[in-house]
Length: 350
Figure (cartoon, helix red, strand yellow):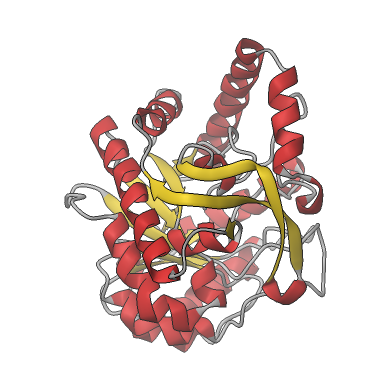
């Protein structure tokens, strides 16, 4: 059987979908800009545009041969704040300035102003998945931000103990994941890239909480966790601050024991020492095989050669192929070339 392929989450938006998002300019998309847009647009017109854009993105992934697709996260301003807007205690009006990534990223961010509590109605996430899955002949994966990643892009004014905050977030995330399961979703991905930036905290309490996020999810649902090393601010940005790729090695052994069906890691940009894969004895690895913020298109042979090297360390039945992260930065023509080459390489192996 050829290697399976998937994408991580975000997809480039259509020109006619004017939602303010992190892409293509992460520094100029604050909550206030999004709020003003949402106040000015007709909700039905926006929904019509989103439905059209989702149909195009889903159709394109199917045509390219991606096995497990996503909705492109087209409804979201970004994959974190869109989710946080639906959780009690997040204040999107009284923002706070925050720096992270050692000063590599800073912005006015929403504030945690009270105890994190689950909204009275979490059916929205299942309904969004149903709308997207109805457009697809292939299984559609839904993505959810992880607790540590939410904490990293918001400002905490309420909790004195970050472990408690992380656990409260995990409980709320779990309620949403269970709603996805009830709706029929069979592929659910938790995005927790901050693990790579804060491996000590990930090992101390982060991993316990990602397990809590999937509590009571049965064996018929594929559970994934995504750990990239960070987006740049723009295309072909050479000097942006990424997480230490050595973090993967620090996390690998414990991650492998958490029971995830797939662990998604970056490789195209950072070129790991592939002996890292020897540490994964149980989990499938979703290996990032094309870059997501580089205009250079990796050739089929380049991707294939890297996958052949990976197969020296992990059996084919436990290797999946994907981009490093979301595809929101990439112009559509470059995006399609990268995915087409990735699919061709994956289907030529083992």
